[in-house]
Image (cartoon, rainbow over all chains, first blue to last red; front, side, top):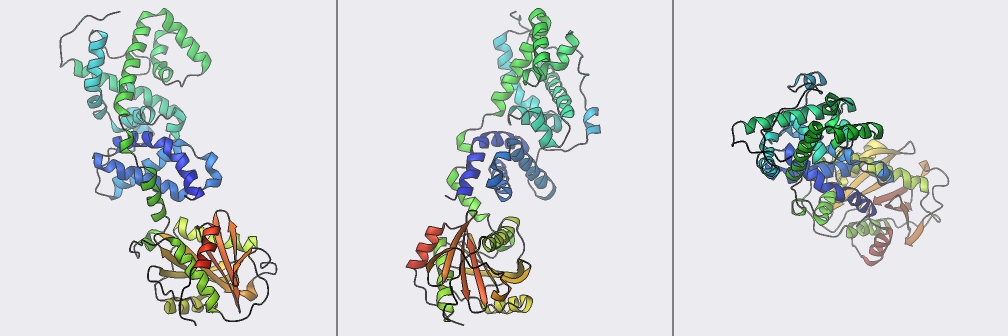
Length: 190
Length: 268
């Protein structure tokens, strides 16, 4: 294997799982994840220079993946679950002010609560605004810091921090709303 | 720190995004406030479940090294060129040897002296190769007809190159474009085999600066080879022209194949 290819593989190999986890949330059909991942790596390869190996960061790959998804959204028939919105629109999205009390879960014991989360969190995530969802996915699945997410999204770090708080609050509100349509209250173990 | 501030910072705390002083202040409040401690516990459980849900990919979902390498090699050609190509199964070494052998048997003039590859010449032709392969510069004439491409190159560059005809049908001439080497007009042709590109640059020897022919390892006949930045550059000075062929093949393999191959071809 050529030295350049080895250098490139050394860089991308440990990041593939994270890229795949994020990529799954960008595409509407699971069969498109492999193509998204491959196109991302190919674009990265074309831009890769081994002499700059130390300067490449994980965020660089996620930027490329996002660009591929945006291109597909614009030009191809593939369904993409991605929306780019402005900072102004971001602040108007529904969520309480940072210091306000959180939406309250019904009282339930710990095991019941974990069971509830396991059962409903994917649905709650899917019902979130795409921008909130993307911020969460980049953080949790991509393992990116707020600064790296800011780089991927092209937003200030402060906006990412604010978006993250709003996203988590919105997720919680969604989960709580699922509770009100569900099972009886049980005692919470303190 | 008040409870309202805890609610403001809770997510950054759980994501390890708070600086140390703020983090300590946060922890101090949580240690003494049951309500806030419960909220941290709830949000921690939510985050833990998010991690489990979102990171459910397995190694089986990923692209293994072999598949990725194969895709990387294929992608090293610009899209415009890939559309001209059927898949090839032959090792790219054979094409490099064909070009080198074509140099040797193509010109029958005696040696004009020891020629070699100056590092600057190698760097210029490698950069030209990279611009074409990595950045996708378009060919100006896309054709596998060597006479057509040779005529076009002479017309555009005044370099009287007659491209070698390749007797092996596994390799294909893709086309050419005019370029400049050290500010002087040069003819650029590209060949391909099995997804691996090889460029051939020709310029008038009279345009080559003094000192361009003083390095490189002789590998047979009038051909010299230099390794540069991961590329192999073969050069040949014949008559009025200086040729340089570039590929990503390792020099040893390139040289070895050159010695082993015996390719019959038409002369000029």
